[in-house]
Image (cartoon, rainbow, N blue to C red; front, side, top):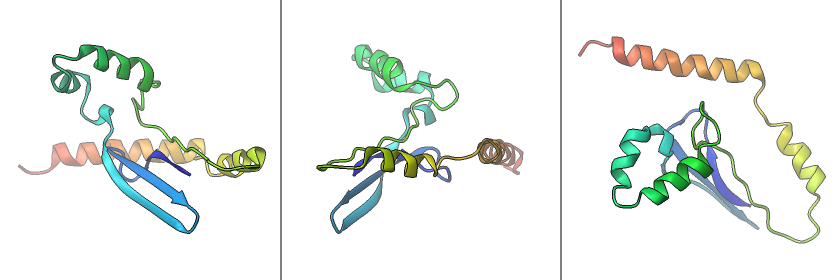
Length: 117
């Protein structure tokens, strides 16, 4: 298995999962584009706005989450797709957990802006 994922505790950081046989690893793989905002992104893609447009079109599937996502690739023979899907579905956050996460982000932003400078 391999692929990028969004860690709820590190919402600006792309995490990358790699697991093959007995080898397993998770590491930081940069920042989600959404964490910098679209205007800042445009400065990164000056001279290549076609790529900027592609990323916005293909990766920003949610106005709320931007390009943050979970993406896992399974490689192997005779995999139990239904079993894998059921196991992954059982790990999804509940609506209550997502509401708590959103509130934690809002609280962190408010704390940052209200902190003495």
